[in-house]
Structure formats: C-alpha cells, structure tokens
Amino acid sequence: MSEKVVFLGMGGTIAGKAAQAGDNVGYTAGQVAVSALLDSVPGLQLALGGRAVLSEQVCQIDSKDLQHADWLALAQRVRQHLALPEVRGVVVTHGTDTLEETAYFLSRVLPPVLQQKPVVITCAMRPASSLTPDGPANMADAATVATSEGARGVLVVCAGKLHAAAHVQKVHPYRVDAFDSGEAGPLGMVEEGRLRLFNGWPAVNSEAGLVNLERLSQSDWPRVEILVSHGGAGGALVRSLLIAAPGDAPVRGIVVAGTGNGTIHKDVEAALRIARAQGVRVARVSRCAYGQVVGASTQARSGEFQAFGLSAVKARVELMLAIAADTQP
Ligand code: SIN
Image: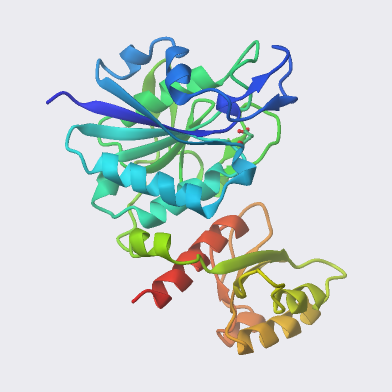
C-alpha cells in the first residue's frame, strides 16, 4: 500500500485573494480551495518523496471567525485520516490569526497513539494572489516535515521554522516570519527541502484525548472567557459576566491574563472570588510575552485561581476541555 499525505484546508490568508496582485492587506481570506493551492506548490512531489496526496476542504474561513464546530470538524477529520495505516501524516492549511489555538486544541484532543504521526499546520502572511505569496513555500516545508523520519505530534511550520503546538504564538501582524516559540525556541528549521531538527520532536502528552470528541459534538462547549488585569481595572467586567444575557450560555470559566507573575488587581480579585463561589472556574496566566507564572503568589496560595503555564488563548482551551471532561459521563 503506497503512503499518503493528507492536506486539509481550513481557509486563511494562504487561501486569500485580493483584487490587486500587489495588495497584501486588502484581501479576502479563505477563497482558494486547498486542491488549487496544492497545484501552486513547486517541488511538492520532491518534498513528499513521491508519496500520494489527498486533499479535503474542512472549512473555508478567515480564522478570526473560527467557531468551536470548526475545531471539532477538523479534529474529527484529522483523527479519521491518521488512523489509516497508509496515511503518513496530515498537513493543515490554516489562517495565522488563531492558528496557535487550533494547534493547541488538536494537541489536547487527539489520542496519544495517533500523535505518533505528524499533524503539520501551515499558513501564510501573504494571500495566494500576492506577487510574492509565502504559502507555496510553507506548504512545501510542511510536506517535508510531515514526511521526515520520526515526525510526530502537532507541529506548526511557517517561514522555514518548525514550532511545537505548546509554545508557538503569532507575534507579528504583518511580517512573513510571524511566529515565535518564546523561550522554548523553534524545534528546527526547514532549509532547501531538508529539516534540521535541533530540539527534538515534542513529547506527546499522555493525557491528550481525554475529552470525548463525540460527546463534545453533542453538547454545548463550556463558555470560558478571557480578561486582562491592568492598571485601573475593576470588578465590573467580572460581575457582568455572571449575568448571562438571554440566549447566552452561562459563563463556566474565566481566564485572567494577570500582571507580571500572574497577579490580579485586588478589585478584580474580589469579583473573581464571587464568581468562584458561584461555581465559575478561574485560571490565571501571565500577560508577559515571555515566561510563565512561577511558584505560588499570595493570591494563588489558597488554591483559588489555578495557574497555567500557557498563553491566555491556550489556557482558555485547556480550561474549556477540563470543564468538559469533568462534566462528561
Ligand atoms: C486568518 O487568520 O484567517 C487571516 C489572517 C492570516 O491567515 O494571516
């Protein structure tokens, strides 16, 4: 049986089109089918080492508009493809804006056994219609990674760099090299069609896949909101979250991007305590660009507000999955 690499399209700038070829900002994301994008990748067959390609459009969106249902559809398609023995790996073309959340989500919901194969998410900062699109090279690099010896886990490839889902973050709104892995650094580089891996493949979390995707598809996802603690902050935002407007789900969790070592303004803290007393789970992270919450601050010592060593958007995914797992029979 010949090996295959599956390309799943989610939309994004990589599939974007502008009226003018020179326009790299005034375009519409999610216009070009992933099958057509594949035709624009020179040297794809070389990167794939002659393996067959299968493509499938999962959705076609600007990733800022991503819905939980899109994550679910993607996770289900990835899971189904990876389970087939002939599938060597999956490449996902995705918008850059929420790519890090999708990567983190997949790394937490795909069972460890399937993460022994690679899921490589790639993207572009210039639309497909650009005079100099970066998507084709990123797709070729993703193909190189997906077929590299030992490749596993949920990975991100952009501008020649390979990142792990746990650390990758979009750090620039315009630069082609828009992603960074902070203090962890990238896992490797793709250079002239070859991967130079200098940090090893990411460890697969043995607790990944604990949330049952089928059940997640049958129930409402727990509502988890993010807020930032800042100078001049108060408790009003938290208090307003506790009153669900008609038609809105009640809030089940709040992630606070805290100052410095994940500390929270005393007025926000007081309101969060009320939220917690009403059964809302509260997590805190640091709003700093680097590092993570270290040790237990006075506010955390009571165990009230669990600290996550993640960015706020990834902590939101983590908390949402934790609440869902707790409530799943
Ligand atoms: C998107 O995230 O879908 C649009 C922006 C991008 O891909 O760079």
